[in-house]
Image (cartoon, rainbow, N blue to C red; front, side, top):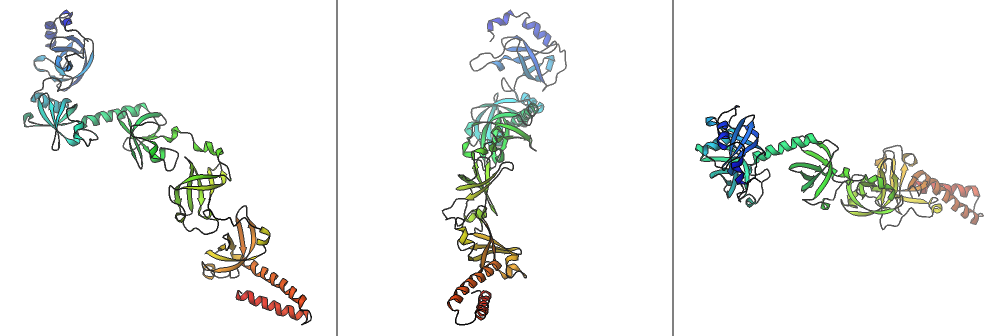
Length: 482
């Protein structure tokens, strides 16, 4: 920091520099932004070499703080604006409002779009009162910030840079905007950031807001967005894990139509299926219902690892018409892993219920019995049936007695028929039933009963007549459904 006693020890006198400054070497216009080096500091002025041998002058007061300390010294590089070139003298300002200002200077700032520094002195109707070096200006509330705070006191008694957007009545009506400058700075930063990074790069920022559709992140003044699908590997990410103001790292995906950077946080996390070996077929685990569709539900076992629970695996003994009759979105349920297909990243699940499993039974007697089944659905290729013990099976069209007409009309939903077991695989829970087979099985059972009766009544008639009469009786019973 320079000492005031050094002002008189400079190699060139103030008078010499002033004389040089009055001899313009280059052409400058009011409003030009220039850069130069400080070559001399007097008691009230700073002399700046802005081009070759051309010097310009800035009021020293622009570089004094509240305590009188200087923030500039010989040799410093500074940036400033040309505010006057009259009489061959080039006068500069780092920002109008740091030193003295006149209505004419404010008009120049308006015309040449030179930023001015002002202090917000009060919150008034529709905006704020702003003082720029003793000149009162008005800033509409929408122009005080890019995202206006709900509390006006966040701005009162604070100094900011503004741009004059309206100058009327010879300076008695001046409207300023801080937002215009902030938008310009923001766009410049966006352009610089876009040039310095590319898709796939890792970047860090601060979470500014959380939404149902994702989160916004501040990248040192530049807003970026992480979509919901890119927050974690989970289909339904738990946003309660994050907090506004928290730092977060992400990978750059792209720039959207508005030029906003789209990020992915989940790509910073391990791929979930790398841990699939921690699960095994037959294992019972807790899972969260993350999506429900017509024929089943997707259950998340761990972030990014989901299994599918078909509607026909939601009960062991009854038909479930809609998954919503049993499950609710985001509900935690207990499921059994039936199958894991690593290459396809698919898992088949079954709902664990308190129902007794009807598929665990004595298969030898089960396959030799005639069963009563209820029609749950009827299609052209056959019937979906439910046995009295809760097992579900299918009777192909070829195994039905009335298979020549329209199957749905001949076997309405809710009706009952007699069936026999044609194929049975408890491991696969596969059951093929046959109405025709039930007739054959009934005939066989009736004939065995007849043989027993014959042995007891051998003296009453001939064997042939008894057989004929009994067989006719069996046929009539089957036809009448008794």
